[in-house]
Length: 66
Image (cartoon, helix red, strand yellow):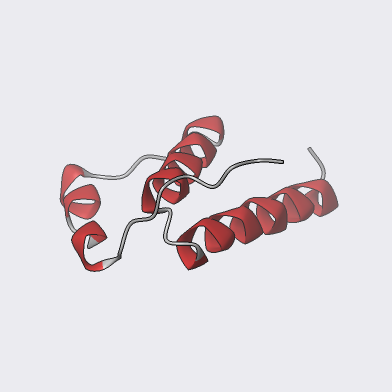
């Protein structure tokens, strides 16, 4: 994948993650982050994952796709 394509891909996934967070859909945001990390060979320690403050963010039901 060339640099421009990789940058575009990162912008798209970042926008989608930010949208999920803005809508209060933390589960979907974390799922997107996890998928991105797996696809790109990234890892996170248990300490890092455990430090994500998901209880402080109000949860909303998943949005319906129309």
